[in-house]
Image (cartoon, rainbow, N blue to C red; front, side):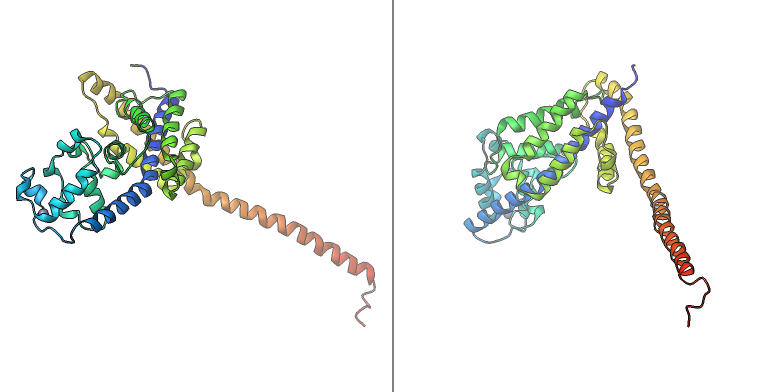
Length: 312
Ligand SMILES: [Zn+2]
């Protein structure tokens, strides 16, 4: 098998980083929107809590559910964009007991109503871009242009999740990262702080050939790389051929990330040495003129009073 092209591998890692930054960038928008929706529903239905977790206990046998869980289910049902999707909800995978609480955990429990194949997720809904897009598409509260979401989804699947060669060329990298920026720049999303930060980071990936070293000086970026490495096993591979291709690329990918993390850590550790040299240079720059001035002053005094009699 041909050796992996390092530039194309770096482009793949850049896009993987871009996807993580995009997920982080969407957080403020998702949480704020879900909080508002939650408050609106709370005002419409009678106050109260469930102590049985009806959905897990009774599943689709709705006649057994308590009044509170049923009310929440009816209200959320109104927010389903597609009837087909509403009919497919597997209530056994959802915790209606969490719904009445005004907390991020409750918003996430509610979001499961709108996300396809919740049981396949290995991390929180809001940390998985595929799940987030499913939420945006299926929940009426969100009104993001379908084409923007379809582009992100296509690039994520083709260039990342099903890319067994872990290699992305320059043009593809640009298109992938631009699709993420386009989504983050939707006005309702871009007005949130987390989206603004993410756009700056992704634009840096876009304008740099390879992985931007300045980015790797940040602890958060190195942690993101480690997370990308950790989540790498989650890439979907179906056929035996894909598994073989994936296995050969996997080691190159992990090794490259390790080198990047290690390289940036070493550079950071060296930084104080550089600072010491700069400090010494600064001292020299200050001291040389100072000694020079003292020398001139002492000569000047001697010229004024060569007999040293001026003390009288
Ligand atoms: Zn209940």
